[in-house]
Length: 301
Image (tube, rainbow, N blue to C red; front, side, top):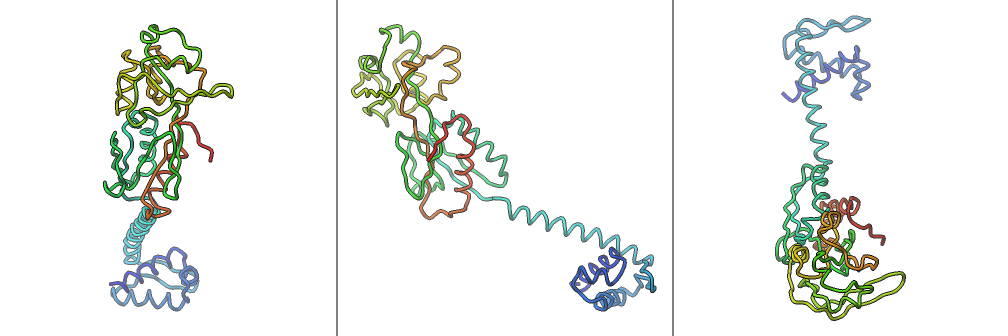
């Protein structure tokens, strides 16, 4: 059967070129070998397929029937070969990713959505959690981390920064005298994020720097989204990623305190196991995140 399939392919190619010589040149065979294969096919089928003259080749009725079937077969095979080749070159596989829950409300989710559209054969499992998940112990391929400092190692990649703002509700702000500098805020009621509790807050303006060391904090919370909702409800001052408050800042439901002073940004970086493939899906995803940073501040490093 394999020999007959090869002979049928040679037969179809011969008709396409209109001569044994033309088919032989493309197939890298001699004209006599091409003629021999077609003769063998005719002998096997027991019918003539081609009328041979010194000027041209013409098909018999049986030859026309076989040519139609041969072209249908060859087109189908060629189509599958092209499809398989395309799939082989298209990234595929599965990735388990853990990320802080506060990123679920950020442009990060839009980046992931665009990645999934671009690479439909990659399957992602996303775990948004307030608990810091370990890579190996918890079976993750990639972790997205946030912090005031980004870890630097061969198995990490700094992606982008999230701008922070100090916010409070308009009603809460009315309870205090208008501040002119960060030191004026030390007696204000602060809401603190547990992982950053008692961490000094660095303010900058026009080359000047002020640090608020001790803060009057009645409440500590381990969830940035809950912290923001508490601030919006009038419970106190809160340091949050700016994207959490973007809509409320426009509507005036929440206000930035000391808007002329800049705060340290939150560093967002990727971390993966040291033995991960250098050119695998992890590097593909982190590269796409770094290059598609809409809504985040670009890192130059």
